[in-house]
Length: 323
Image: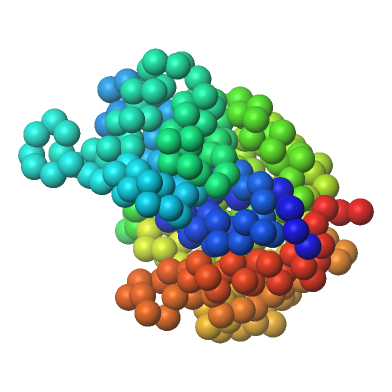
């Protein structure tokens, strides 16, 4: 199967891994769109957001870099936008791409036009869009072991680094406006990929933006969940693979998927994962196990080449849009 329109939703390093894989097979995934979370409030993104009131640019920048052209010019610009200033001054820690996006956002006052402009500069194989048109905040209900009871915490960094058990998350402002272009991309897609990534702060938020959630529920695209290789310290510490699916289903009970993709070595109890997935699989859905981890990495990381081939095989086996 060739010429597929694929939408990948997420943020940070997880989305970067998915996009790096998709970029390797333009013969199959001819039209790639990244829909990126906009709730980051830490580091360079958090500083620019607080000082300028703009969409946090960091996850958007990483997605653009992942889709940059493979030629010399594309990789040069990708490396440049990822470069961070050193020193101890006002620019210390800022990524060049974050500043470029912040400047373009102030000039154009249009996030989509801004991202399209930088994508042209990088020669991107695909498009990057924000999931919402305003900066968002994540709030969470957390059970703190040393305090007892449940407590509310606010902010992406606070949720991602909490020592407590996250039960559920929601977004502020209430009913945030989805990016219209992102909604249309999901509706028109042949394949939609959700994950991997920080589960509560990069993956689930896409299902909490009403317009985007509705598009995900009604699209005829084949919907695929890509599971993480390992739980993350903080928000999903101690989570099993099936617990990731349980919280996904709990936040979006009506969300049915056609496939769940997991790394073989990352799932100690495959049958338990299959049972958990059964509650959210479409009638023709499947759980697929494959070796998609980078064995040479010191930290859990997907191998873009292995993930690309697995996605091609998965789409080839299951087809594109629901028919």
